[in-house]
Image (cartoon, rainbow, N blue to C red; front, side, top):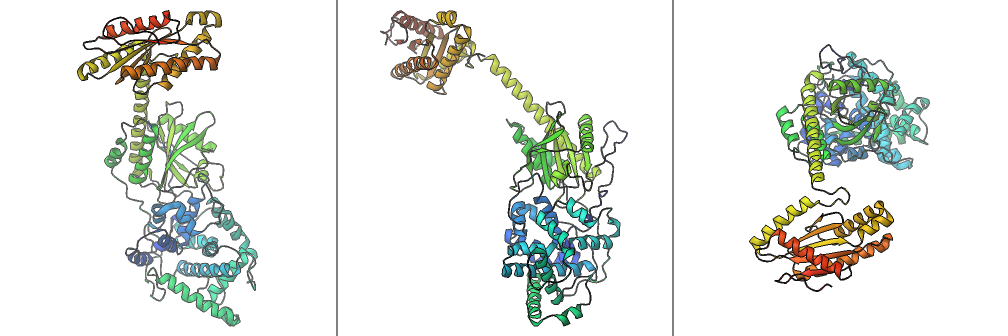
Length: 624
């Protein structure tokens, strides 16, 4: 990975061209993107419902698109299954939207006489033959056999593409590219084993011999390899059974291609130039659309809501195939992936991603400048961020550099191979970064304000409301009761012999007693009831819409539950309660005075009980 700052105040952290890694597939990412083939299959697909089955059948005709899809599904960051890779499983992992994007690339001009077309037909024929041989021999799942047959010639594909599109000459060998793409292990093992099986075996005994037999049938069916020897000689030496199998294979190949309008009997367009058309990239959305999409979560109470909106806007309006949100750990210099958006249901498996030293330098420079950076991979570097994500390049957008854990948006187009071009992508990336950072800071400030307000009205020891909040709540309930004439009950609770408990057992045990009482009050009372710590060991409870009969039952449950909690903790913990209800033209002071007198009546009659003043006169009712 390389990067180069400019001389401005906010440097662009990479000015190298996006093709510097030399990925051969960038020149030709899809066989079905060949101009005349593209026109044919799109006319057919327009009449079909593109479900998983149709997408699988279509992608089975495009070995290069399948390579890009397999690379994405085999990325270390995603959870992997134990089943053998097939095109159908790849489509189900990617989902319909991403599977369609594999085919949504710019058309490429390839002459009708190009070896690429000959190699393509040979691959389809070999795949269909391998599928049938796998079914008859039982060596492997038929769909897995099809995939091996389709991709068995990948090194030749890469060499042919580089020869056809000479401007994309790679500095690395074909096998190095296959390893770099992190393709499934069984496929890589086959590609390495095939050169050792040059002769056609009499019957398949393993994956490599199965593919050799299938390739031989493809040649007999008149779908030879561009580099093959004399086709007529191979047919002359073939046995009758093989020739009959080759005839059936030819009909099947023609039927498969014809189902998508790719009838091999129709002549290919001649006279096209062999130069590939440059990829223009996907259409970018307008910045104002992206902003409106993100600002829809302005009032979100969680960071996840903001992150989800950011990632969705990057994929929808930025033309990116995938978007990740990752926290930066300053100590370990690693990225912790927290969320992703790629329109698929794939689940993340590697949360903490390794970062190569060269990547660390660029990411830290991006945080310092608060400017997006462009990371470009290197062949053979396995322990790196780009390798974990299975991509050749990505755009890293820094967020909230002053947070304890700053973050990055990681954006890439690894599936479509559309290049990241800083001049075109800079505005969208900076919009996403600045908007996301501001929303995160706004949420942090709102949470701090809410926390400050909570502390202003909360008792820190018991986590109940404090006296100020309790009196404010009581004033509101009294005013409501005066308007609606609905019942209102107030309970004044006081711990018995609390000073003695503090003096004999210590203040820590006293604090435990207060916290235990607060817990019982929370668990016993309704959520609509207001509970506050009124004084040192006093608690005030305001119960709206509570009749005197309901209040007496509640008071009984309270002093019984608190005594039970004291026994559990081994503390002499009991409570005395005074109870009163709202009377016409009552005031806060009058209710508090009656509740206080009822409380002292409970104290005078032996404690661990309640007394109620619910009569029209001021004398408290007998204690209960």
